[in-house]
Image (cartoon, rainbow over all chains, first blue to last red; front, top):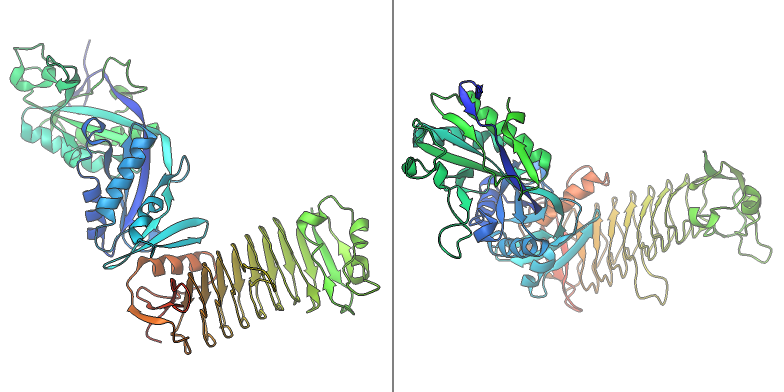
Length: 302
Length: 271
């Protein structure tokens, strides 16, 4: 059978397998966008994968002053976890250690509905009795005196159980430079899709994994079928012209958001073309039995 | 369906207790039944039909065509719907209301919004003393909701307030926010003497530095806080003000240290 191609790039007839997750979002504001992003980047550090970090988190979008509750520049941060309890724990610890501490910051709900997760309601105790509760416009805020003024924090934020974690695709290229350029283009395109994040470093994963390992206690290990240095010694997925593979992993607020992000990412890679970027695009799955959400590449092409 | 309208026939000869004429209490009553309700408080009390001509049916939208400073207790305990008065009203408008909206085109007597718990009371004219305050013997004043006075308010506005928002757009008398427990009072315009007298917690938000303060208020200097921007934005989005009240870096007094001392007076600097 003739392989499916777009702009000279081979598209594997496969699908990305993703999982249902819990997600929440907050809006962080500061006197400048630089400091809003600083607080957001700090609180989403070490949050690439639920396996080792407890949650997956990153900046969703930057928000202009007209779109934030207090009229200062800000950004929306999303957090994903496997249970409500873990999501709550991660949210409290990360906002408490990284946003409360950041100069000039304030923190608001970035999502409505679902079980409310405590935000200011837990952090208010830092005020040691000088915290101020304010309720107006149907919302509840806490004001906590700190050394540069006040930390203003909404009492709770919303949560969704409809979130999806683990949308992905693999970019197979002739060398690492081309794989990276293709991945960067995909990340830039997906960054514009609201309600999605790419939790890995710069949105890109170089160490895709397979389930299980030869060592006891390891639940995941290197995806040897896609490791170019092992081509020939293991049952490889890679043809001779492929020398580097990078993966994009996407978490989204909804199934539709992940689809839209995959679509945008694939389009960016296809537009770049095989000479400068990827020769082939594939996706990661576990046979389709573990994850509730399947994203078939052929359905998402431009 | 057209809203239930009470058209005033002539200036009433006695004070009227109109607390029965709310969407909740009129629900399910016929026009004839409504006309027989007592509203007068003298020995030979006036009935609704004596005072008003009644038209329309929908009790969730009540309108009073005409007003009088003898209209007491309008919208008392209201929990939903709308109530509109085209003129003035007397004492205790919107007392203990929990929901819905009351709009008064004219001015109010004393105790407007007394002990209100929720909903919105908007007064286009002036308000008398004890706006939102408790009646004698009560421990709490306003406990929630939004109270807007587009004109001026009298003395003791927000007395013993515990929660909610009061906005006064043309200044107020003495002792604004007296004995306040918590909540927010925003005042645009001149504020009388001793605002925040004996306040425990809560926020008084002014567009200028208060002229006469109790000596138990302490100057906290200029503060750089996100809250002022958030509240300014709230007032503008609600249509209460069209320009920011406090600005980015307001001044602050803390007090009243004669009592708990966790309250604040935030005010716009540079005026």
